[in-house]
Length: 97
Image (cartoon, rainbow, N blue to C red; front, side):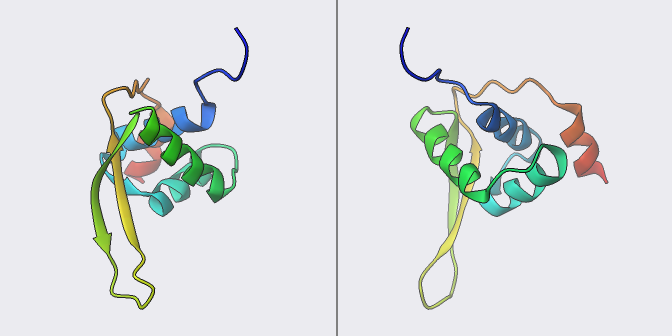
């Protein structure tokens, strides 16, 4: 089989984070990711969230628009039907602190 494998370690780690947080936006996910797993660029988190939407591993929970002049907002993500969390204890311990 040629090409890249469909799975990703970073995306699986994001699935684990969302399994415990239920719903979060990208910056919240990246803050937890940086404390629990090896450091990655925040752009990688955004990339894997978009890729996970295409693969139906994530779905959009809600969009909150900010009252800023540029109209940016927060997209809250949740697990999609194709997500398969394995249950990482490190995240649960971190979120309990």
